[in-house]
Image (cartoon, rainbow, N blue to C red):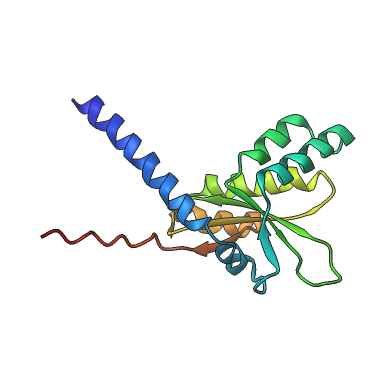
Length: 159
């Protein structure tokens, strides 16, 4: 029964994580807040748009196929134009309820991989809390961070 309990706990944890990720990624405002973007200057990059960019970079030889696959596994990529006359910045986002150093390192690694295709990138992590090891990793890796509390679910009233 201990194995079954751990397995169920793992499934519940993954479900909670997936629900939290969907909640956090529903609007670009959370990413904009992390990087200090003005309203309306940042938008999510759709999957088709991201895949087209990654495929073009692989064909051009500026991005290795395994890096394209890794970037495609990011929780999201957002496009930001900091100022009208500046180049776009691609924000590579990782989401975790409790952000750990490996989440920070993964975001930084994926942003660095995407940057090899010749674009400016910024790594971002979003979460409800920082693990002890995450704060140092944020500084070392120069990754943007923003706290996003989980959605408050109000139970339905039953008569």
